[in-house]
Length: 178
Figure 1 (tube, rainbow, N blue to C red):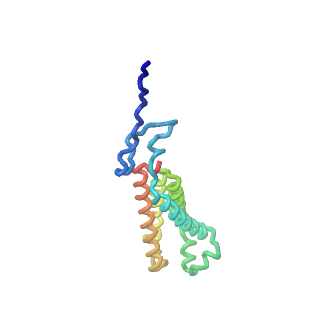
Figure 2: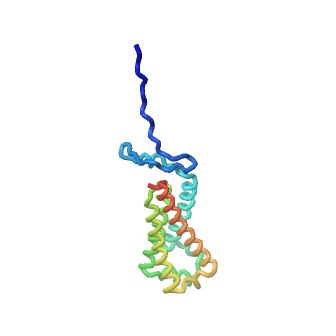
Figure 3: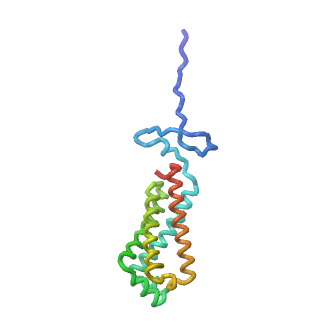
């Protein structure tokens, strides 16, 4: 007796050719989770950027906390004039500084967790930085208080914060962040 051959269904193709970066072709779901989310290749640099910036932003969070709690061992590195300047921040400037610091820290954590919230958190951090910079450089003479080294360090902070926003946005657009 003759048997008919078994015809198996052709597997669905979820990705373009590997040379095109494993971009999802379809967005099939399985158990409520989009297949493209399961299969999106996570670049190694995401873990590196996430870990390094989590440490970087943790240092910023420590600086903010040490200043607000007036930790003597940390604050002793500043002159009496600088301390008076830091302790004289109005509440709205302190709030903007807190928003910038804690949003950045959470943004880095979201990068490591592959959450698209990182983009919004880094955007909020930039907004907090704008308000803080307005106080430091427009309403007061923070530049004179910080000196050349402080100005360079402030420029580095801005460069990193802007870069993190655009990096997170690019990772979200590529589907790496969900």
